[in-house]
Image 1 (cartoon, rainbow, N blue to C red):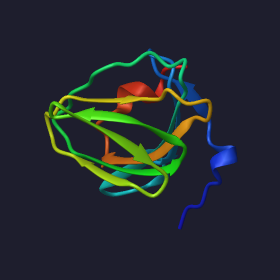
Image 2: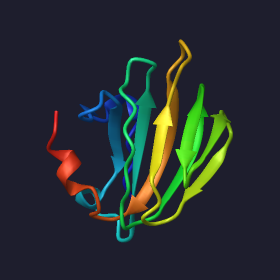
Image 3: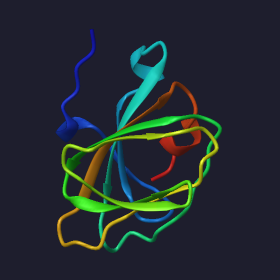
Length: 117
């Protein structure tokens, strides 16, 4: 078993100003999926991304916008979101409170992000 509190996870910044904390990763021995926590502030620069893997997202804080597959929707605390592989997607926040969400992806897909500060 491995347990980490979000307060103890190292915070990294994406190139667009989003905060990311790796909670569960292959470095901790997970066999299939990795769990990350993101915060998007209204100062974060919107960026559209596309990856060959799926994302499962659960909003745990705030409210924001997700654009995925050409559709834009408001998301808020308690929403669960599935983003299929290769679908263009973007998270934005226009509110004072950060948009915080858990994102689960297949193990090893974002190893390059772990080394960025």
